[in-house]
Image (cartoon, rainbow, N blue to C red; front, side, top):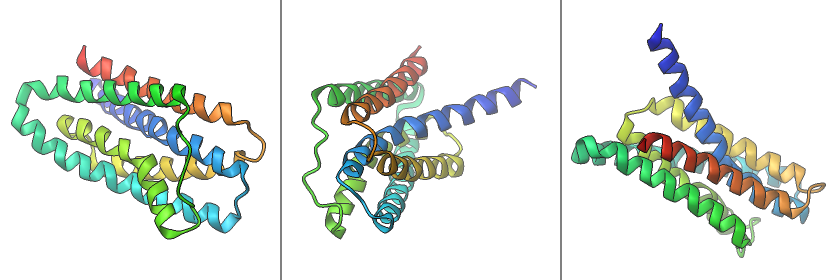
Length: 186
């Protein structure tokens, strides 16, 4: 019975991390949505963000598994430290308000940069999870699904929601990652 609870706890942790990482896509989607986005553009952005939120943690997990083998028992502390740093960076960035997008998301290059920018932290979390040997398939699917859905949600809500909520959304996601990092360390 304890194994079932442990497995459920692991799955819940991955889902919460996926939501936390999706907060960045949500907050930036809010900003873009306030400028007006067509439905087809919302779908394109959502699919591209989902793809990057799927691939980046996959690459991170592979790198993390390799690093975990090299670090051995220290992997727990290194991966927890990475999550603390990433969460702190997300909180710091949201407080500074430097989330302005300079690339036009309507072009392929701009969409690529937007998707990469909201997914790059998924790589770092993937490295941490790779050191713990988490469920690879569930992790990448959850990260991709939540990243894509939350970006589309941000775009949809952008018309009626102020810019401030987006900044708080990123800070909330950072706080979640920071908390998990501390839990992993201690």
